[in-house]
Image (tube, rainbow, N blue to C red; front, side, top):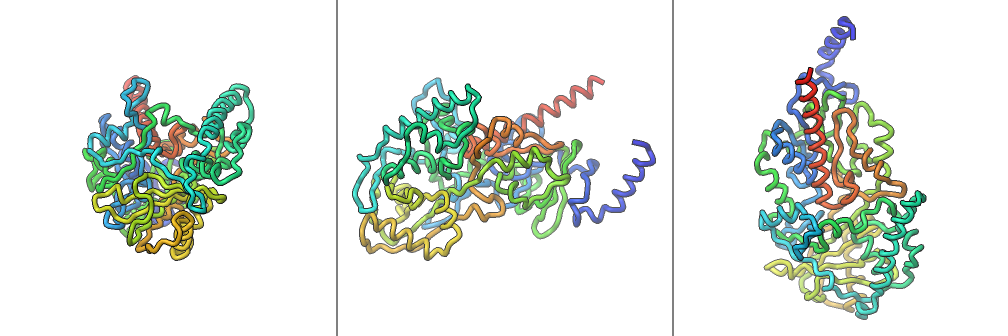
Length: 487
């Protein structure tokens, strides 16, 4: 660039310095005022894992910007019924209890052991299922039939990929494998086997991109339900203990826009009522697919079309946990899972009796809702929700006298920091889609559970994604250092 043009740009930047905060979309990031080498946007599992990886490798000049008052992201515990309950992530999924050499160790299990985090082994055999007349139909569930259908689907997926066939939905694959649920018992198993994991029906998910049983195959088939009164996010507090302080972590700092180039990244935030600007040589964007799709955060320059296309190829459904406190317990409290086999496969299909999980033994039920029922419940009047709960439980237990004392309906979909629970790949998502979703634009890197091809939707997927992204930056820095010292 000619010297005259260079000086003109310097003058222009100086003249507009006072306008940068007011008009971030018009500004270009200037790299002479970096606040840190790396900006980490978001303090969920990916953000804290990335920070720890940088820290352990000697890069300790980073800032973490988090919109909420505390770290954790979708790992969030609140007080309800005299105990702390997890509104979001609740399970450590994929644990080997056999000490088999064929499994890897789930890093969350390592953190759980290190912190002595309280968690209950999920015994899926401890389940009783009733129809809408209160009849126990557990023994009539066609479990072998659905198991055979899923085994068939795995073979079909491998065969279709090898042949270069076009992607189809999981529902289409199940139909080819002769699984077409058409009665209440089959509806229950259809929802329990798929929606309970994915938070959306098989009709909406790509067969080729579906995560299937990757976690079980890689880490083990056991799951643990976290009950620790410090909260699931305590694992992240432990992970971040060496560096989480007021200088590094800025909470209640909501990112409104991001500027990026191949030289630096700047974030504009509202922090405790004030507009602030933070810049770093690199940025790590951990925001959910829902936030990126909602465009509540603006980018300058605009994200390239290939990045936008990748972002829009995912659904972010709602996995809704409705906590219900009664004045007495009237349900089966000696099982872990209480199912309903009814015609409407999303209509209060599963309850978890929770009183047995806590010393105080509250009269507490947890209902799991997905799909359209979840969205409707999250947005409707709580009194309507209570009526639906009463009806669902009276189908099983008749006209009980117990009353609902309190109810908690977390709404992740309308929450500005999430806009949904976790990602699901829509039809047409490929390995290339995941690569493009994670690929940097300039020095701005993208990470989070949605970028984890094999473990999307899981906390350990977010954890691995954060570590991977941190290592990409470390490798880039190492390459720059080698290049500098070679010239």
